[in-house]
Amino acid sequence: MFAGGKMKAGIVVIGGGPAGLAASLKASEYTDVMLLERDELGGILQQCIHDGFGNFIFGKMLTGPEYAEHFIERARDAGIDIRVGTTVLQVEGKKIVASGSDGILEIETKAIVLAMGCRERSRCQILIPGTRPAGIYTAGTAQRLINVEGVMPGRKVVILGSGDVGLMMARRLTLEGAEVEGVYEIMPKPGGLIRNVVQCLHDYNIPLHLCHTVVDIKGKKRLEGVVVAKVNEAMKPIKGTERFIPCDCLILAVGLIPENELSRQIGVAIDSRTQGPIVDERMETSVEGVFACGNVVHVHDLVDDVTIAGEIAGENAGKYAIGEFERIRKGKVIAGENVRYVVPQILRGMEDVTSYLRVEKEMENVKLIVSGKKTFEKKYRIVRPAEMVKVKVNADILTSNEVRIDVKS
Amino acid sequence: MSKAEFICIHCPVGCKIIVENEEIMGNECKRGEEYVIQEMKNAKRILTTTVFIEGEQRMLPVKSDGEIPKELIKDCMRELAKVKARLPVKRGDVIYKTSTGINIIATRSMEKKQE
Image (tube, rainbow over all chains, first blue to last red; front, top):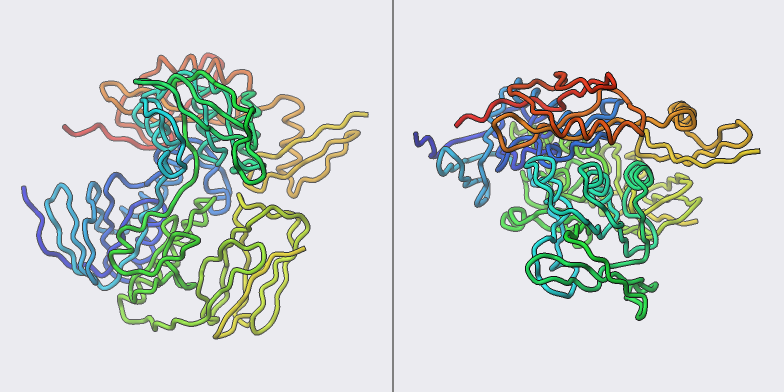
């Protein structure tokens, strides 16, 4: 039956992962919400079958699917108009065109929440030379193959990149009977959380080779092996350190990029450092009535923070939709010394906020300094680029013009 | 005189904990102390994996109901390779009882595919 056509909704949330679910739930306290998801609810959590999620929100460690189901159940009970298998094709102003099993939908809405998440970087984006055989996968694709579809991507595996997804896949492949020759990381430090290095690599005696990268790929139809090499401080391969490793599978865990094709279509301003929309503390983007949350804004370490951001975006989209939201855009945040980026990028200085930032380089015994109308300092024993730094900033520190955040010894 | 180093895996902080002469140092909370004591006696982990589903080409995510000794994980995996779950399942349902007495439970609810 064709049930498509024109419809109306108070708020449309695009993306049914943890950010979109939290936003929908909060927004549904204000008005009617339609949640559009192109696959199934839960997003990437459904393939993250390992535990470690929800430590801050639930006070215990859940697996990805468990964490997701808590919110999916609540979303169903809240009477949200959930449409899975529905892909948003186009957004023009507050008009959304989507395609799903009900045909083409044209939805008119008052507010939009962007929660599309992020995508993996692939071989093209890191420019590994060599042939193009079968057997090269991004870590997320390999994770989906093993955990959802029950297919092994290879038997002898080399993993490039030591972010959390790469570490998880090293353990998962080992448990399923593959041989993981090693994890190779171009940086001098592991990219993921230390606890994941312990429970994924040390537990299974999987070697981690820091300051290494893959410099060549061999094999015609199927991958036959890769050449790895040491890199210098400039991250350039050192001649004479090349080593050939026979393998039938290369897993690329080389980073994530927020997915903002739709945001750009809407005309939302994008931060060149985060690759996500520029937002204020209410998660409103540069386009009035368009909010954003989760990994579409910047790549998070912990899903708990994604949920919190989703709730903020949902609450304010709700207020906007019922006319209880006054748009005020002022107060720039400047990423100072040893700060790669800060989110939100705009602080209006009207309420206390939690700022999220990433540092450029690892430093011990540092002070984080927020300078605005007043100055505020917080000490950290260690800061690492791999771990997001969270800091609560009181409204009275902020000014209407700009705030600067530095991390120095 | 013994000295050993641990990294606590119980939360994302990842405290570096040093044990020297029966003194535990460096943990920011009580769970770190419990972790180190357990790690020295008998290291345990939660096993998270998947099992086949009868008549379907997708996997059901499962986990051990509680921590299990590290050295039993491989045996558990071997046993679970033969298990086929029957849908529908609810999150928390016991899918299989291993020979060592550990319950394996579903970590998501799943309905039969409607074809």
